[in-house]
Image 1 (tube, rainbow, N blue to C red):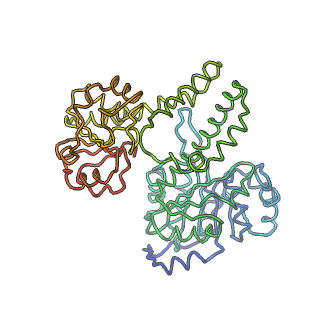
Image 2: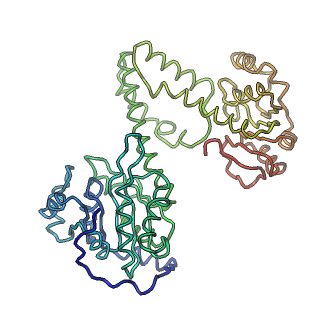
Image 3: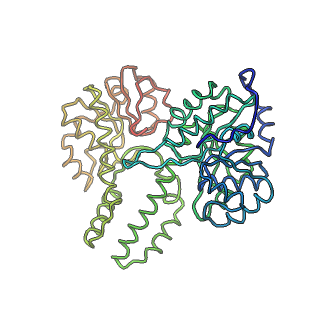
Length: 472
């Protein structure tokens, strides 16, 4: 963004303001609409935001360095191709709610809130090019020092976690001499717009997420977006930044999964659309929060076996399924990550709380914990295992054969005394949350112990060991 045409003339603020808010003032702020809003970057997200916010009654200023885009908007034409955007843009331009400029200064001095929607293109190595957004932050910061009122800056460009706090905030503060969270508000708000249905998506978002560290910015954005028919969520800036990547990656995974299943179905003379329609009817496990929490590797008698069989079926039909074929190696990488954390500690006495692949069963087949135990024994560590559901003498069939091939002498490292195991271990690998395990951790752990959590303990403050999550 290039600073041009500085026509406005505003005296610098006489003093810096420390903004203190109580619940009542924040609520009043949230209801104080319409607002004066500037949008920096009139590409896809910026053009849609500009038109929809103007339609909702806000006084909008669009900012871009591309004079062709600005001229199109002056004529009532949207600079993008999108369902309904031309009609909406023409309507709001004629209604007088939109002005456009290439002047950063004019836009900041004329508005209360700025949405930053400039591009963050990928470099050849996949990293983000932050030159444009950093330049805009510097230019906005240079104008902030002239304002006597608090400005809210909302980054909507997709950026990796830490960018707002480590790149954009320092640029704003250095250029303005002001402090984020004190003199101005800085937020991150991910957008969930799909090309082709962006206006509908703007009006019907799955949720509104605002990452911010001060109440003023959150209240301002609640006043602008709180009317939308979804939950309004306030979280940290880094969480909001990461959420956008998680959502888009999940969408990519779903598309790839459906296509790979479709290819296999095609080779097996099965209707893939019927298969996926039935798959989506399962709202308990398939289309649900089930399995979508960071935890540990999967195991058991079903998932590894069936996944391997499906990949083999594809290979037999000369079908490449790179994503499905990578699931087992990815699962193994998580197990290796957990093992390495224990080995890297340099501690020799290891206590494992849980051995079966799932709490409440004695199924040891393909249990990642069995793999861990086997490696620890192979490395010469002093290992003790507590799992009240596993009685080696009672194991039968495939379960018994698996353990005899993996850890034939496992009975010698099993114990029924959970308190003694917790007291005597230097490293605790916690894979179960049974009441007796939680009680032992609360009573017998020590600060010098390392606790590797693979069970997602809910009350992490209840024990005294040094805590480390396996994937979090």
